[in-house]
Each structure stands twice: as structure tokens, then as C-alpha cells.
Length: 425
Ligand code: SF4
Ligand code: SF4
Image (cartoon, rainbow, N blue to C red; front, top):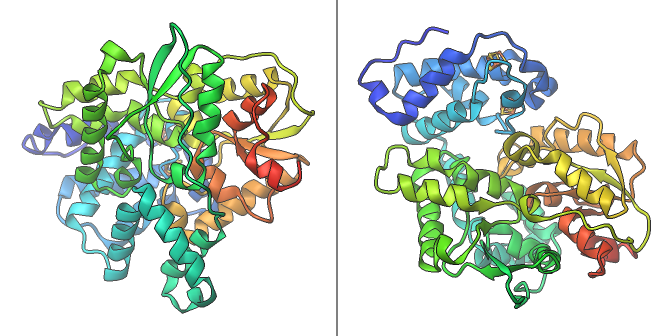
């Protein structure tokens, strides 16, 4: 479609990328039916086509957007189901990412919203603060109702998570092993350290040694989706420096992070540094070196402890980002599990980074819809590849939710996944 950016605007490489994708959109609306927020709300402005029109107006005009535009862009999950569905090759990520940065830098949010976003960016990116936050949330649980709106919700979410002892994945020293650097991440080590431990055991059986990447932290995906591009770049720079300092490609065959939300972000890192010629080549090299667990795991026929019916909840980052959904199913089936496809599997579960805190109503409706679809399968457990989905779907109203790696490790002789053992096996 036609665009009206000025030549000066198009010297910004991020805007130029957005413009290229705006021109590719023919407004056919094929993507609309795949969009979770359109399916729920039935409003064109809450579907990709409507958002694209609003984002184009906002980016062309520059300046502060209208509250209406911000509302509908904020409601987008960045699940990228629309990108997968688009026959014209529109990369919606390039549009919504730029729109979020524009909103973050030009729009004055109400103070409470601003504070909440700052809190998410500060606390949820640091495992030690996540642990302290969970501790505080449990202490405050009896009076959480006194907190304002979404802060009360955040406290309730923190309080429902069971505390986990800190756990560093055992570094298996394997002769002639392939070495992979392991990014620690942020929320996952605090909420579910058993996942990295399971991945380390599983990959050790395949001759791959995981080496914790000292100095790296969060991948930056969480703040990236808040439009905080400088924060996202800072987390990325920290990871790149840590990898290079540890030997980079001379010492490692790649760098792994075990949540697909994070690995799909790292594989896409080049886009973040388009306007930074110094860091762009380093970011590109890091993106090329980035691995997901599903890139490395190979099927190993083995006898599971018992036959289980597993609902395979394909994270959006896995199906629309990494495009490795079939691989997860293949690994589970090879390990002897009965794999059940979840109806409406293309619809996001509502987790989407911090979306469950920022948009609790839509997120809650998507969770209920996902669990309703899973209930019809009569599954023993839900498997997923992303800590966000795992934490969001877990609860007394759901079957146990486990990371795919925990199940595969168990089938090969590792410990029973924590969520299953808590349920009594
Ligand atoms: S993004 Fe693709 S599918 Fe959606 S309206 Fe544009 S061209 Fe059509
Ligand atoms: S990213 Fe997801 S929520 Fe956002 S417009 Fe596309 S399909 Fe809809």
C-alpha cells in the first residue's frame, strides 16, 4: 500500500524497515482470523489490519499518538500469528516493535501505568529481585487487596508461585564434548531452575557440555516488548560482551537460552542494532550463534517411566518465531509420550511476557480459553517450551505444566518433573 514518509524519516533504518512492510501489506485481512485479540474482541482495531493502519498513521505523522492508538497497540500480544498467516510476507514484528518504541518515547502514560512498566522492567529482569519480589508478595498476600489494581494482581501472581531453591545446572565434563554457553536469563532461574538442570543432563547425554555464561543476564526480550529499546540494547550488549569475553565462537559452538521466548528474541537481535554500526556486526554474530534447546536436542528412543497423555502447548515464540513446533512434538513422541494437539493451537495462551500483568482481562480470557481446549483432551500434563506459558497456565484449575526438557530428561532416566512429583506422580 502507499506510504507517505518523508525522505528524512526514511534515513532512520527502523522506520525504513517499517515502511517496507507497510508497503507490502495489501490489507486483504487474511491475518485477521488468526489474531487472538480480534477473535476475543471482534473489533477491527484489535486485529492486525486495523493496527497496521493506526501504526502507519502514527509513524508517518510522528509526535505523540492518540490514546486510542496506544490502547489498541498495547492490546497486541506480539504473538506474530498474523505474520505466519500473511501471504504477502508482511513482517508484523518490524511494525509493532517500532510502534512500541515510538509510543514509549513520545506518549505520556498515566503515572500508575508508567510506574508499573518501570517495575516490570526493573524487577522481572533480575532473578535476585524476582526472588525478593516473590518473598514480599507472599508476606503481603493477606493484605494484597489493599494495593491498587494491577499491583495487587502482580502481588497475587508472585504469591502463588512456589519458592524454589537456587540451582546451578551441573556442568558435566565430557571428553571431546561440544561446548555451548548457557545464558542464565531472568525470570526462569528464579521460578523454575529445574529446567536448565534438565536441559544440561539431557544435552550431556548427547555429548554437549553447557558452560554457564558469566556476566550475562536477561536477554532483554521483556523490555523490548515494552518499547524500551535502550534497555533492550543494554541487556543485549551485556550478553554479547560476556560471550565474546568467554571465547565466543573460538571456544563455543553457540549460545543457548532455554526459553523459546528468549531464544527467538536473540535470533532476531540484528534488527535492534540497525542504527548502530559499531554493534551491528557483533549483534549479527551473536544472533547467528544463538541456539534454542530444540535446535540441539535429538530424539532418543527410550522407555518413559509410564505412558502419559501430554497436551503439547506450542508457544507462540516456537511456532511463529522459531518455527520449530513440529520438532517438539517429534521429540516427545520419540520419548514414548502420547502427544495431543491442542485445538485452536494458533491462539496465544495470554502470557506474552508481561502482558498478563498489563492486560489482565484479555490475558485471563485467553488463558481460560486455552485451558478449556486442553480440558477436552483429558491430558495428564501440559508440556511447553517457554517459562512464560508454563507459569501463566499453571494453577489449581490446570493439569501440571512442565517444560518439554523435563519430560524428555525424565524419560531418559532423570528425575520426575517437579510439577508431576508435586501432584503425586
Ligand atoms: S498483514 Fe498480510 S494478511 Fe494481514 S492484511 Fe496485510 S497483507 Fe493481508
Ligand atoms: S501479533 Fe498477535 S495479537 Fe498482535 S496483531 Fe498479530 S496476531 Fe494479533
